[in-house]
Image (cartoon, rainbow, N blue to C red; front, side):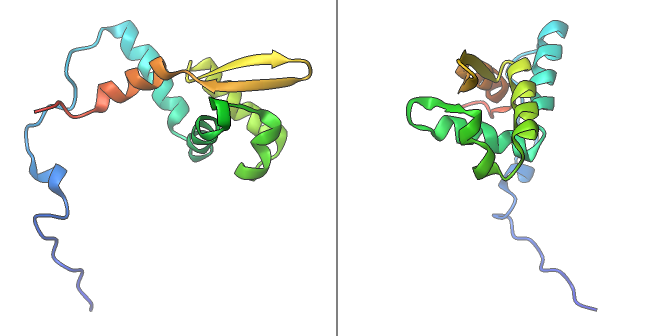
Length: 121
């Protein structure tokens, strides 16, 4: 029976750094609920791709019509995912005629990232 290679100490550095706090502060219950909604919205590969696609567009905004082909989903499915991201405050939406344009909301993404970022030092 083949055996898996034994990991070296350099392959999993985060696991070997015991007792490094994950969060910098204790969050309040209402803040936890808001942030949990953001993490739930992020917990889907299509939504993560949509965020990156919107952020990568020239001018930092994208129309839903520009997102369906790159993500490989139908327009109604993409719109559904975008609505979840807007409801979580991760994207903002602006209606222009019959098209909706989306932008990343940096303050929301920064709050989510700050919660899980390793402390400096």
